[in-house]
Length: 433
Image (cartoon, rainbow, N blue to C red; front, side):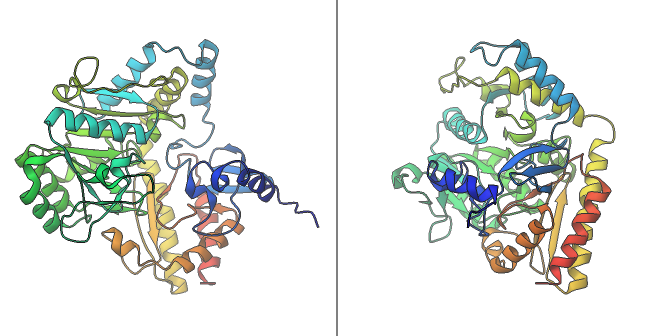
């Protein structure tokens, strides 16, 4: 009997041509099982799969679609840019305008360099930090993802403040020998690492709200200590805001922490997703003295043929203009909180352990009694129960991330009706768990 599921047909074709049938691993549904949904089109808060089944979309291209899919002002900007040309290999005015817009909104930045992906931005920021400080070692935290550059594909070592071990084949141990991997929100490990290696640390890179552990905040005492120790030892504090940048608030996550810690700001920032509006675009930036170490002004080399692409910058610039309209973040936060509180109430009514948190248009939830503070605790989540929840929601037309370690995203296009439909579906699924 012929399989009429177009998603399965496409997946079978893809697996013969593309490793795993996908171009980014989480899309393969390997963690949750089943057949990936191949998206045919998207509009507003929804997408339709190859079978023309509609889903309420809480992935939003993993964060960029803060306005929803196909926002009229963004479409108009992109269409106009396309008519002018796809790519030039030369500077454009929109590159300058986008840089001005980012710097205006993020006080810690004097200069930025535009690139094409979060991985490229994170990799380049680390190279720049090493070049600017003349040091080799970097600190990262287990559960934080900064792209798939070799030096960052590491897991924690066996002891306190140890060097990491590669988590991917093809990464020699020598490549990660200068990467220290610590536990997120663990002040004791942080202090021990700086006590032993402080003079050699070029940068401490952190997701201030980790979106690859689902949704885990850095505590205020922990973040305060990160800032103090970096300042004390001359290391650069680098915020990876690829996910949180303009997603959690108008000043990004660093703006959230600046409201909690007087005078707080990071030394470097890595951004992506929202600043490209869904196009391949990212950036890294810092104060002028650091950024002037970058070629062509300094000795740290970085380049990219499609960096500052004119279509991507048009998309990103239009997006940033929309999110600065009065009341945008207040409405987005309110809608997100409406959803998370509704999910919490539905789980409580069904007697299902559940914990949730959100900031701006980014949220996460766990089938646990309390919010985890680090990766080891996240790993205790009941995978089988989550998979049942995921597929139950999918069957009811709600698309959450197909992995329990990924954050979710609200857009300005989601309506109260969408939230109510999502909560009603969750209430049904919770009763089945």
